[in-house]
Image (cartoon, rainbow over all chains, first blue to last red; front, side):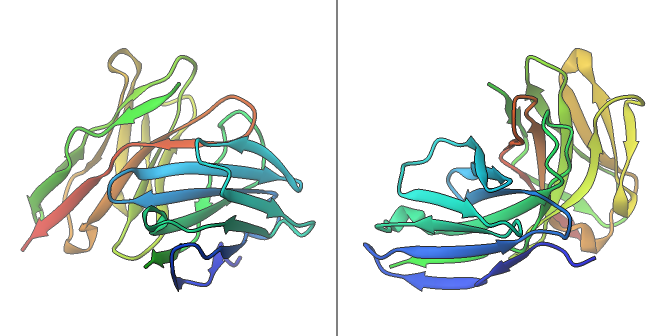
Length: 115
Length: 114
């Protein structure tokens, strides 16, 4: 079974631009979660999508948004980029059961550099 | 709200020696606990997980972890470290509210000396 894939793997943008990252989950998985990883803040939960609906949201500004398509693929968008948005963005997929009793499988990440 | 603490930021261990990484969690309900490993420039790979039952869980790559409710801990161990174990290790707790959210500790970077 193919794992979680993320595209692109690397991205360079300038302040003020916007960016869209893509994530394809493991086949059969209906939940996609996004995490931001930075040296200063560590791994932080952004949001989770299940059946095309945002089911859970972390503490990030509205510039961070996402969506999920009917095939469970997900995109994450960051508008008006700031230097502090430079990070590794990780996508994780799971079957979608609630209650925390789920194993999330991570993709390789997209490394975003904002200049 | 849940939280996870990994007290050791860096650990250096000699190849062949044993390794123990500490993890303490704070969570009001039944914790679902995970250990992930991240090699440089890579995503996170699941090592093992605890949901319920036997408090000693076995994982991949020869790792094991023990859940101790009284100490709110979920420490990761390996009897004999290999050079390929050099990586960053993350402990995480899964939320039991609607949806799935992992809260991670700050990570422990392991350096293996030859």
